[in-house]
Length: 404
Image (tube, one colour):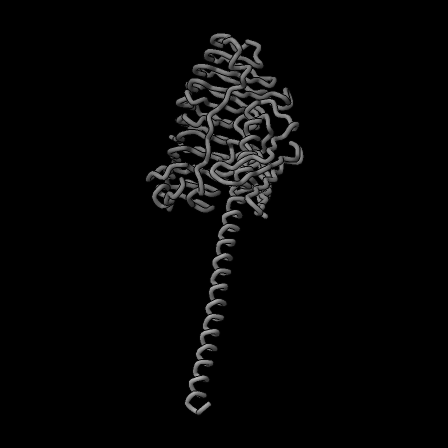
């Protein structure tokens, strides 16, 4: 073989080597790309499964809370059985959830919800607590108007209790009017995405010791539900005789006048279809704890409430938990026109509550609007936050949760 042929042979061999190297490199790159694509697809599938499992676990928790609140509505609470679900499908997802509720009314309730999607599993654990309608000193769907010199403070609270709050679901300008000299010893909350500087009028003239901020979500004010047996019972007509022996019943209306005093010396629950009017120095008087320690008054009000010309609710026990007024959707106004001291709690989501004269309140008021025409102090009884399953308007909410 001459020199030229030898060189040509070497060039051909080199070319083959280069081709082989190129093939190997491309093959490696191709396999790498395939593996990368497969990895990305697996990662996407895994991520989608994890999201679906998390959604399923959250859905199980939400369903458990809803089931617990449905049990409350039955007005005959029992710890057995507690809600549970097994292998429940999650709508629009290839995922399932299961949940269990454990505990009792003494120790509290815990929900464990497990969501599964493919190989992904997520667990949500939550501790529930009962929330009463009286979490706030004053809360309205709309306006709150406080006159000059009013002080809002609280009592019966523990060192670790959440601070006193007043608030509104409204975001409208001047929904809360606090005149000069008003002192609010706590937080003031406005509606979701509301601007406190806009919603609270004259906040720089009032002294607000806490914070002002927008709520993260609307404060729910569910309608009042009258106990079924009271709804079904026949009405006893209009109650005008204060000496009538009452404890549990249904009436068309109540009207007391001419210094008449209806004494409540036992647990009394009334459902009044129409109005309650206290006139001419009439009183609904709740006995003091020494005379009748079990005395209490719960009023389910279908109409309106009016105290005037000296008419008052006189709670001699001086315990706001012993007088509770629950206004139905048809209750439009609750008016106090007599100088007095009121110990009690009012929950009436559709009513306008108005204090025409100097009415000092010890308790809580939750309604559609609140107007105070004459300055008088308002003292929030923090013990109204304590709840049991038989209380009106209570519901389960999440106090603490974790996710795995």
